[in-house]
Image (cartoon, rainbow over all chains, first blue to last red):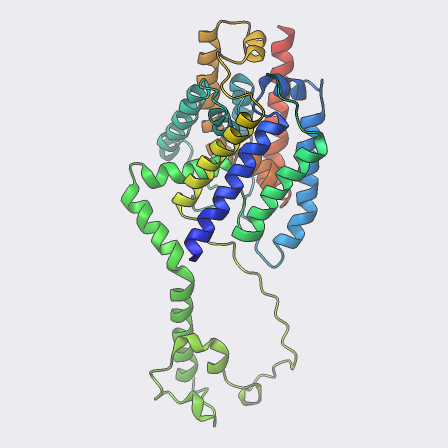
Length: 139
Length: 235
């Protein structure tokens, strides 16, 4: 098995793991999402927060000797995040969740998925004209 | 049938394991919006250019190293840093660059500047090379598959109609909910592109790596989502 095949297998594992987890944690369920966002049920928030904390410790090992990703604060950081947060509530999904919902056979996710692609496409179209700031990355 | 969800610590372990593994093996941050963007670019209108870029990214290390070593050797020999050591004779043009830079460098005794005896190497390697778009496509398909497997096994596959909780919150018909989902999806796509990441990209990769952009973006999107949710539930 060559390196490329191994990489594809790894990526398949990340994806399957994420889809499986998103379903079982409840991120694909709007009732759970809403309960989290209005602090009725802190379970999912605790999952997310604890994961971030675990990673904070774990990354020190995994990323040792490696450069940190260059992700500075730029002019799109805050407005982009605010738009994202709004979209999250209106559709119930962040990108990963859309794919997970499709896997669950929740066909309305095709609509939010279409929106996702449209949004990304629109941004790329508008960026050269309106959003010409440095994001600190080549992408 | 309503599935029962994992306790908080199980979810935490699962998410952390996935994001950590990604860092450990790919040496890059994990993020679904990034994967989507990568796939769109590679298979979209700029196909050919993206394919070329990918080739460049994949071939960088070995080629670049060979070029660097050759250039270094030339520069040093030009400066007359030849040693009594016959290995450094310029006539040896067939020297294989893969022998490594170390063999081409002059020994400490031959340099005019004293070299510390103990080499203190603090190497900061670059981030890993970006994975090709096919790997990201496989990841996205994996998400679909993983959720499908989970849903099949707990019997919750195939909900009919839009999510009742969202419909109740928006206080609208199915069509209204779908319109909201379309608009919401658009905002997510736009916002993730603008801010440089999604929930996973910022929250599970950027924040643990203490990336300033993510440290700011995460509370922003959470804050907005929380505020809007409260607003909707009061209206």
